[in-house]
Length: 118
Image (cartoon, rainbow, N blue to C red; front, side, top):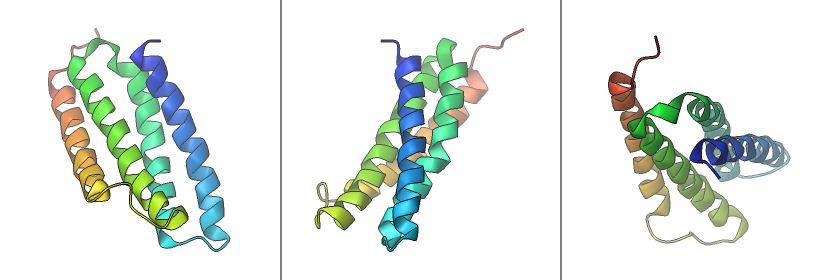
C-alpha cells in the first residue's frame, strides 16, 4: 500500500477517534482525553492534505511520517495515563510533542524545497 493512502486512512481514523474522544471528554472525561482529542482533530486535516500533495516530495513525506508518529505517541500516552493508569513509557508525551514540532518544521522546509507544479 502506498504511503499516501496509509496517510489518508490514518488521518481519517485520527478524525474519527478525535470526535469519539471529544464526546467522551464532554461526558466526564479528563483533560488528558480532551487534549488527546484536540491533537488528533488538529492534525487529521493536515495529514489528509499531505496525503494529496506530498507525492513528489520526500521531505514532505518524512515530515508527514514524523507528524503521524508523534501525534500517535503524544495522544497515546495521554490516553494510556487516563484509561490504563500508566504511561506508555517514560517521556513518551514529551518525545511526541517534540516530534510534532520537528514534523511541522520539516513540513516548512518541504514547503520551501518542494517541486513546483506548473
